[in-house]
Length: 273
Image 1: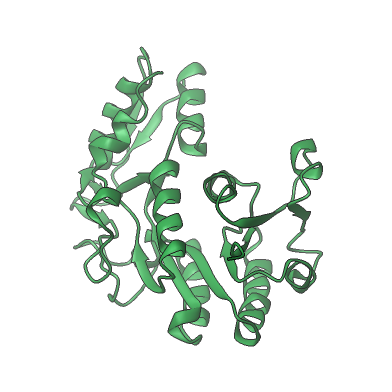
Image 2: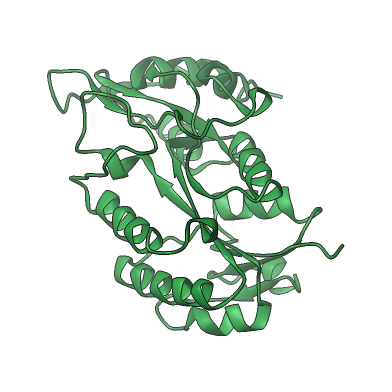
């Protein structure tokens, strides 16, 4: 049987590239890159794509994927236009769209963690962008769309960890939010879950974070202890006097036990090798 053809839009970014590395041995996997880099230019599986200049149809026609994974970042107006074209393509072809959304689609709700079927509502421009694209996708037949809501992502090469290490090296404070209750994931766990969903032809809405919750401050402090022998300066940021949640938990669409992860496993993953 021929391997499924997968196109990762934003395949050169941190998450897009982690997904590419997870899937490329099992599927006929392609990606797009924006910033010129020799390893992408030399890789026959990668296409240059500038969201603000190029029409995504050109890449889609070239690859003709059965699965599109959107990990696009950048200009919001360009993202919306690109996704309108992607959705048109999905409607007309035998194709499923997997969209990396965010816990921020719920950032107006601070009193509870959020579940798959909860109504989305956001105060942030970023959250509203994700909601807009989600709403466009919800008009597709269910079997053609998969919304993947993701909490804060860590991992040894993640932008978050790199920024925290840089702050420590430059004697700058690391911001922690004592009242914020979150769930988390890392690139490894996230890509394994996406691989499983594609393998099983899953569709619908999935919350892909740890199954338990933790205070942001507690999590970051323990994480930094695992990363190395630093003495970080912490800046405690209070956005409200009350505890607030920014967490996406699974209720309707739970993954198998072996793919479920708790926040301690995400911390332990950062122990210096």
